[in-house]
Image (tube, chains in turn yellow, purple):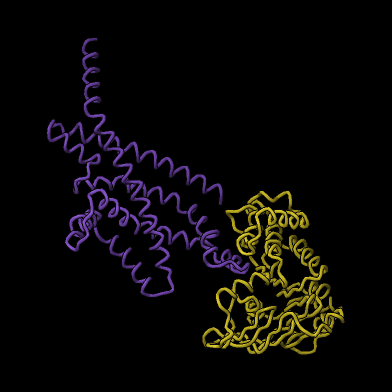
Length: 270
Length: 225
C-alpha cells in the first residue's frame, strides 16, 4: 500500500493546519489538518455538504480559507485576515500552476482545438516556447489515444474524451499534485471507465493525487488513503481497506450503505 | 430612338455633374462610420468592464454612461459635443466632434451587448483557466474576449448599420456627408425628390452589404456552437 520510504521522507509535500472556511455565518470547514506525502493517492468521501469539495478547492486556493496554515514547496501561507503571510495575487497564480485541478464539468474552451486547449497554459503561464509546448502536448495526447483528435474542436468529442483532454490540459503544466473534483460524476456510465483508467495510470506513475469521488471501487483499488469528511471535519482517515472495508463509525457505515446501494458487495453488515 | 438617346444623354450628364460629389459624400459617410465604430468599441468595452468592476465608483460611472446615452437623443448628444463643449473650452472640428459624439453614443449600446456576451461565457471555463494559474488579464485576453467577440459579432454588425444611418445627423453640424450634400444640391436645383432618393439608395446599398454580413456571421456562429 503506502511505500514506507515515502512515509519516512518526513517532510510532507503539503502540510495543512487548522484550516477553516466560512461563507458568512455558515462554517463549511471546521479545522482541517492534513499531511499529504509525495505519491499518495487520497480519496475524499463524504455526504454532500460535508465540505469535501470546498476543501479540495482550498488546496489550490480557488477558495481562500478563512483561517489556517498551508505549506507547499516554496509557499507558506497564513490565511488569517491581516496576517503577513497571506497569499498575494501573484502567489495565487504561481501556486495554482503547481497544483493541477480538474472539475466535474470538463470546461474545455470551445473556441480552441484540443491541441490549443492543452498548449494554452504552458505557453501563457509557464512561458514555454510554442514548439516545446506542442511537442509535450502531442506526447500527452498520444498517451491517452487522442492524438488523432488534436485538431478537432471540443464539441466534436464525447464527454469522456473531453474530460481526458481536461486532465491532460492540467498535466501539461507539469503539476506536482493533481486534484480531481468528482470528475466522473457528469459522465454517462459507459464513459466513466476511460477516465478512471487514465487516473489510475497517473497514480501508477507516482503522481500525488487527491480526489473527491463517489467511485468507491476506484478509491479502494487505486487509492492509498481514504478520508471520510463529515460536518466539515475529517471524521476518519486511513487505508482504504480499513475505511471502506471496515468502517468504524455509524455515520460512515450509513454513508457507504447509501452510496453503494448493495451493502453485500463489500461485506458490510446489512 | 432619339428619345431613348436623349434620356441616356441626360443621365450621363447627371452622373458626370453630381457623381463625384456623391462619391466624396459617400466616402465621408464610410470614414465617419468606421472611425465612430472604433470609438464605440473602446467605449463599449470600458463601459461593459466598468459595470463589472470591483470598485463601486467605477460601476456607478459606467451605469451613468449607459443610462445617460440610452435615455437621450443622439442628435442632442452631437449638439452637446459640437456646440456645447466649446463653452467649457473644448473646441473641435465638425468632423472630429461628430466622430466622437457618434462613437460615445453607439458605445453605450455596444457596452450592453458586450455585457450580455460576457454573461454568456460559462463560469466553469474561467474556473479551469484560473486553476491553471492564468492571471485575470490573460484569462480576459485569451479565453473570454475571443469568445465574446464571436457571440456578439451579429449584434455588433447591426450596431454598425445604425452607425451608418446616424452619420446623417452630422449634416446638422456642417459635415458634408450624404444628407447635407443632397440638401446643398437641392438648394440650387430645387429637385428634392431626386436627390433625397439618390442619397437614400446609397445608404441602402451600404446597409444592405452590412446586413448580408450580419446574416453570414449568424450562420457561422450557429455552426460553431
